[in-house]
Amino acid sequence: MRTVIIGNGGAAMECIAAMRAGVPKYGGVNSGRVHNVGSLNSCGEPDGCGPDGEIHLLSDSLFPAINPTLLTYFIAGKIGLEDIFPFNRDFYDKHDVKLHTGAKVIKLDASGKTVENDAGFAISYDNCVICSGASPGIPGVYQDKDIYTIRSVRDAIALKKQIEKGKKALVAGASMTGLKVVEALVGQGVETSLTDIQPHVFPLAACPECAGMIQRELEKQGVRLYLGTNDHDISGYDIVVVCAGIQPNIEFIDKTQVDTDKAVLVDRYMRTNCDGLYAAGDCAQLRDRGPQPGAVGLWSNARYMGRTAGRNVFGENEAYYETVRHNITRFFGIDFASIGDISQGDDIFETGSSGKYCRIAWKDGRPVGINLLNMPEISGILKSRVQNLEEIPAIMLGRVFSEYPLIRKAFLERGA
Image (tube, rainbow, N blue to C red; front, side, top):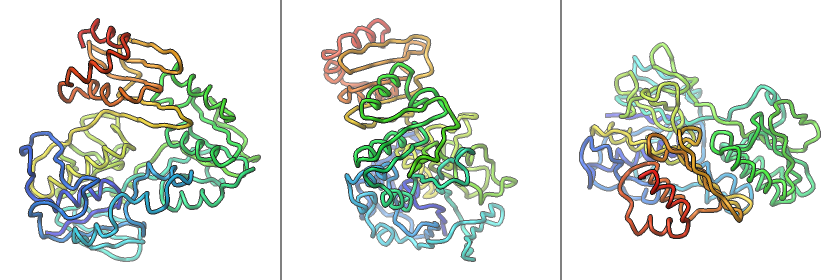
């Protein structure tokens, strides 16, 4: 059997590790659980007795798989280049993967089951997993301009070379990545401005009240904010970095063969509408979410999707368990967490003092969205409450409630 993997990111690595891992050591078939096989921190020798079929990986990148969330730490000088590669460089040899890198995939024929790259290499497959990821989204106002993005190793190296004290920079996009880039620039003496078409930072993740607190802290750091505008003049800046979302890499797909929307449409088993064809990561969209692409852009979800695809290529019948959308980050000494969908809810609880802030949105008696500022010790516990994965030990909830009695009261009043 021959499997072709398109892409070389977290979803691809977890897919490969799961394929080579063999029968799961815990859980059952179709249990809905994500089995701990080939996980991020254990991607050396594979467990079990995995398949001995061929695995071919095609990618335009010559670098090993990266964790893109670490790129801003490299730019800031907090970690070295080698630290952004979470998988060992010998991962491919240990998992017997045949590499075809440095050339972009330009054609996928799902009917004929072949893949071709722009170097003229073509290969047939029994199974194919599309893990092609996504590229930075560039709004029209920045098209054909001298800008930087932050998605790949080359992006990070290029931007890092341009950072010099005394320069002026504009970051377009008040996203998680955008704020981390702002922090990296300010930390190295670059006069930095932030702009976004939305009226406040983290427009998808933060409520206006929480965003306002963050914005005041940014201004204290000397960051100039230009929010609610799409026509900011970029001519006076030495560096312009665009962090305005992502676009799934699916241009090589024949949409008359493969069902797509914003990304490749898959079911909970990562299967497309075509025989032997799967998709995982930022290029995949769950059919049963309708027009919503799900937690696109989350490193953890990309890995879980890849792992699920790999298990099912191996022959299991395992459903993907989607985690709630979550962003937990730290910048300028601020701890911010967004869990679930803060825009939903028919009942809102809010409290804050001394630089701390908590907002919980309830719907039908259960928490569905949370914003936290400078309360990192409880973000994981409250995420579990939103996820509703399992009962949380009383001692853990007691720890939260003892330190934050108003949150305790809010949960008790709602029976949650």
